Image 1 (tube, rainbow, N blue to C red):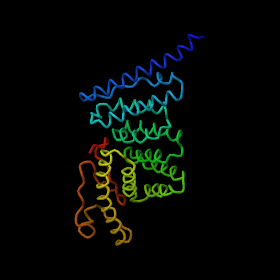
Image 2: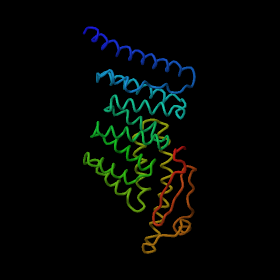
Image 3: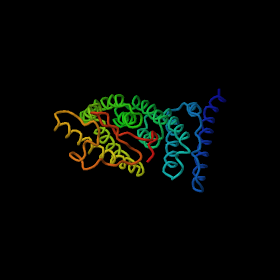
Image 4: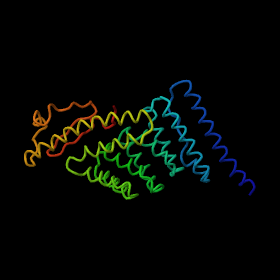
Length: 278
């Protein structure tokens, strides 16, 4: 019996000690050269510890490890699989860590459809663990709209977020706008401005700011389409070039990342590369 108690104490301490050593080994390596993010141990190893506070502590350590790596100027693309595994492990160990969901959204969601889906699965866990935190369904809805091109699913999540509190009722309006004729660009612009305001990392804010500029140019075309329709009694032009020169002096030019897709009467701003590289 005494041996079992001893093992119950010693094994968790050994696991924690081993992980602390790995953590500081990576820190030392990063001070010398560019390295990949070191893999985390399987979630099951951490969960053997059983104790809630111990799991929370390990989740905090993983969070710091990823945050330091992410902010250290290292090759994020080369370590995206390891980063995803870290996020999944953290999510299982401590799903109530709200800061973790911000970091997951910033670091993982834009790395390709597979990673967007991983991010959304993590956010779904957050919806259950933290049902009163509006950023979680807001982020998940944004991912469905912006990265996965599923506006209906995105609108459902916005409507859910709008029910949390009266002050979030505007999200319900955003959901309706998203599904309305010509609303995709308006909703996208509103959403991007919200994402810009919610992110603290300078690089992420710059990425959203650049996308906002593209959506604002698309809104100029959307408004011109609506003016055309008003003057013509509800008819829309067959092609965007018909807006020139009466409604627009010229059609705006977009970066290589975006292009306009006009399917009369609806206008969409779409991304050329699903990985959303700038």
